[in-house]
Structure formats: C-alpha cells, structure tokens
Image (tube, helix red, strand yellow):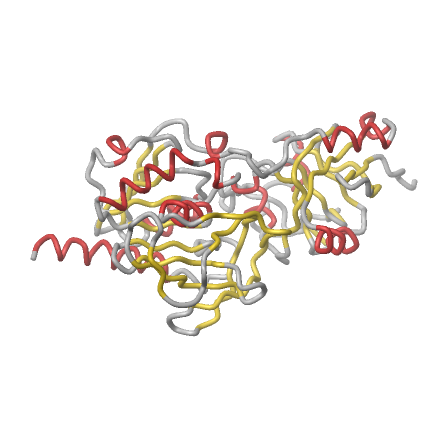
Length: 381
C-alpha cells in the first residue's frame, strides 16, 4: 500500500513542500535552518542551542543507527521541528536502544520526511533562513494561505531570548575525574554534556549555574575560572549575562566561552553582534587558527556572529585592553574566536567539545587548564 503524503512544510516566503508525517502529528513553528553533518543527528537534536529552530538535515538518510542514552547532550530533544529526506526504516547498531521516531514522539517533536531537502537547502542558501511551520494530519488540511499567515505571525529569532528556557533551574556540581587541578564556574546558557565531560576529564571541578546568576553567587566558592556555554537566541537580548561577564573581566578571572559565550564576550568587550544570512550548522566547517595557520575542521551551530575587524590588534571599546580575532571561518571570514591580550580571556564561536566529531579543537580545553595553572602561579609569585 502506497502511503499518501499527509504533511506540509510551509516557509515564510510562501514556498511549500509536501511530505510524510514524522514524529508527533500536529503543528510546530520556528526558524528553519539546515545542518550539514553526515552523522551526529542525535547530538544535534538534543543540543539546547537548537531551541526554537526547525532543523533540516542535508544528509539524505537519517536514523539508521537509532538513539541511545549515552550520546544525548541533554535530557530532551530541543528542536522545534525536524525535516529529513528519508527516515531509515531499519535501525541497525549495537548501541541503539530505540528508534529516532520513538524519541521524537516521546518529546512531542513534529517532523516531516519524504521531501526534497536538497532543493530546500538551496532555497535557504539563496534567500536566507526564515520562519517556517510543519503541519501534519488535520493541521495540514487547512488552506495554504492560512498556514502561511500562521508562519508569518510567529516569533522571529532576531530579538528572541531563549537562555532561560534551556538553562538549569538550580546549581549542580560535577566532580573532577582523578586529581583536581582547578575549579570552573559555568553559566549555563544551553550547555551540552560533552562540554562538562571534557572539563572533568582534565581534572576540573565544575559547578553549573542558571543563566540569571549574579556575580556574588557565581564567585561565592572562589572558582579558578568562569565559563559561558553555548546556547540559543539573540545575543543582543542577553544584557544581564553581558554585565555579569564584564564583572568577571574586571576581576581578571580566567574566562573561556563557547558559541553563545563567544558572542557575549564580544559584546562585553564592546563589539556588536549581527545575524548571519543562513548561519553555520554541521560538523564540517573549516576554521583557521590565525596564530598557528592551522586549519581545523569544526562543529558549528550559530546564526549570530561578532562584528569586528579580523586583522591586527584592536582596543576593546569597553575599556578591557587589547583584543584580537584568533580564528576565522574559511568559508565566509566570519569571526570564529576572540582572544584578550591584556586579560586571561578567550572564546570560540564553534564547538570544540564536538561529541559527534570532529575533535580537531579539543586542545581549547587544555588551554583553559593552562590558563588556570598560570593564574595560580602568578598568585603564588
């Protein structure tokens, strides 16, 4: 029996794609983006940075290795919707515990399969990311004009604050593996489990705080370093976190930021951020380390970036001394890393924890350990 298409993907510009219901039957709205990784769909789905977004997988066959508890980056799937060309009918992997669709249904995620994701991706590459909706079952039977109106009336990502939605509601602590070399206070803006694991395995004791933590609470246990995690939303809405970071910088406490944390460091230093046309998402993005001239293949998920000159040394407009761009994306020259020259602070726009791979940038966690050790040595001197 041939299954009839019972789902619609509706874009803000009025373009529609028909397909099959996948996951929960119903409707969902969000910003539609594409992720270019050939693998790592579970890590993508459970990454809190994707909150508020409908994710399109450019790889044509998704779900063949199933889902498992070990590879989850958080306790749930965070994407607003999911778009694939073909959902694997068979799950075949010794680590698989359940199917992809079972997890989508469990977490109430509306998806669509059976459409031309190549044509969709090329359209988004030309026009830019936009609002969209997935409608399945009875929801898909509404007039197209009605569905387009629903999409156009939905909330845009620009100006949207989502850190509070994905952040931990209370403080928790993770002990270091083996010998403790230092402690890190993390502001959870949408952190991934692999980030914490990378720190713990390097002997760092980690305390994770909610997004709206104040400076006194954050520094109450005298951490050796502060870390701002990845996360979703528009960095221009995170003024409270920017002010918190400025207090950290004033105290010259070692700081490391990833993704959203990189954007907030840029804003704390006095630079602007802006929205990219279609962003960087996937696990195959080439980044140049300007200090070593080494090219790293890296994992990304960001739709915003820091606006600053990538050549030479710049004075921080907010008065934090000299700053330079440490990494740039070789696809479009977007700022991918910032380094403070007069303060022990640095950040990167991409994801060095990269649970799904690659692991070219894992050294950045070693740099944090070195920064902590250098800071301790200076205090002893």
